[in-house]
Image (cartoon, rainbow, N blue to C red; front, side, top):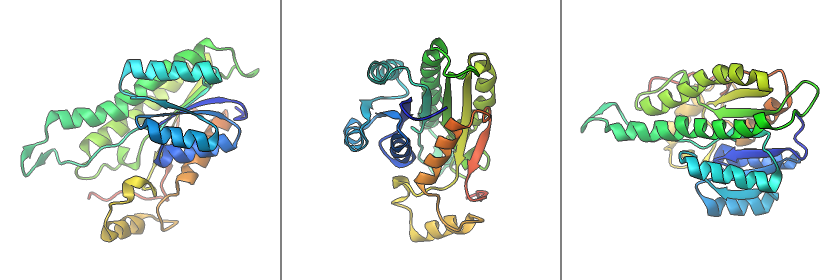
Length: 254
């Protein structure tokens, strides 16, 4: 699929990996809609790249449907969905204060898993109803952002690891279900990247994270994530797969 003039949705697109993806895809000529809970920040970025900013809570069915509808009205049917919205604070299952409150686990899973699924079910419905883009019948691509934690969850990452692991499990299932409609499903599982979330990490922890990488010995650059997303969109034979993007890191227990 060519990115020139292609309508794209990026959730969590106002910062971090999502922002880098928005900037990169816009430079490739895509019509990018930035869906983010932070509408002001999304608006600033949209003005910079010539995109469309839409405030969106990915966990809310109505908010998601409204955002996708507004993007469709402006750009046409989105043929690409890149799910970057997500997060989660570390917390032990049983800590000093006793068991983790169940709502803390549910909150993270709701954002990372249910939010991602919510966007896919809505965006894929539009893609499936649209005409094929080429003689091979391709209609679109949906992409999740998982994490190395899906494979090596660290102490305190129960909710995060579980939710990202579920996205990994969904990838092939969605590829199989959407195959008859020409919609591909892919996931990128980043390691540790240089995003705003790392701003409060201590120098000692930062050094340990860098040392854990095999090569190159550094954090990932958000642009490298964006470049991989663009390649996935363009390479029709990539489907139903999870690609680790992590400098060969394998996360330690803690």
